[in-house]
Every structure is written in structure tokens, then in C-alpha cells.
Image 1 (cartoon, helix red, strand yellow):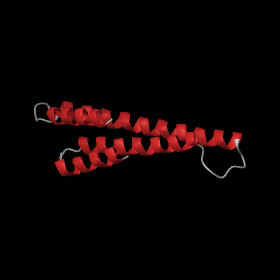
Image 2 (image 1 turned 180 degrees about the vertical axis):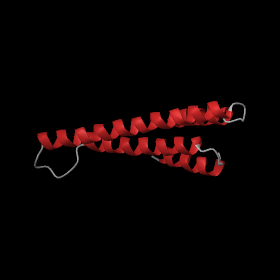
Image 3 (image 1 turned 120 degrees about the vertical axis):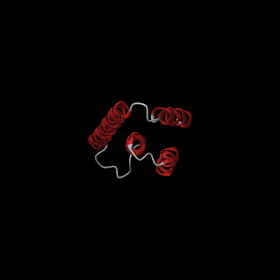
Image 4 (image 1 turned 90 degrees about the horizontal axis):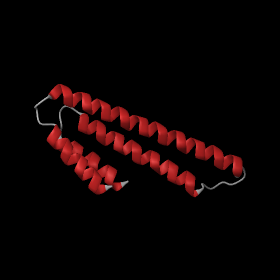
Length: 107
């Protein structure tokens, strides 16, 4: 995942040169929308897993491994969304982007 993030980050830096700002903004918005969809899908999957766990094991008080994985996936997708939003920011503040990148890597 780290290599993929680094490659995407380097590509982002290349893409943000002020050659075609309108096109870059549109691409950034598209990336944000895609990331938001992934977050929504991950949340939906986590909710479905929680309901399935409750149906199968109505008396247990601990989380199943599948539910923990699904909930963790939501956190990762939200961190990726935050990173994409930071990258899409017009100011392109390198420090903020690096902080968001570090947060995703820590997940």
C-alpha cells in the first residue's frame, strides 16, 4: 500500500503543475467522488456484517473478526478520502498533504 501511495503522490505532484488547472480540478473532484463512494461502500459493508453477526450470534458481546476488519476498512477508506481531499486542495500545501499521507500510512 505504501508503494502505491508513494506512486500516486508522485503522480499527483506531476499532475499539479499549472499546465491545465481546469482539467486538474475536474480530475481532483472525480478522485474525491470516487473516494467518497469507497467510504460509503465500506460503511455499508460494515453495517451488513454487524447485522449478520447479530443474526448469527445474538447473545455475543464481542466483535467477530469479520466485523473488526470491516470497521477497520471504513477507517482506512476515510483516511484515504481525507488524503484525496487534501491533495485536491487548490493551495497544495505540502505539509498538510504529508501529514494526511502519514495518517493513511499509520492506518
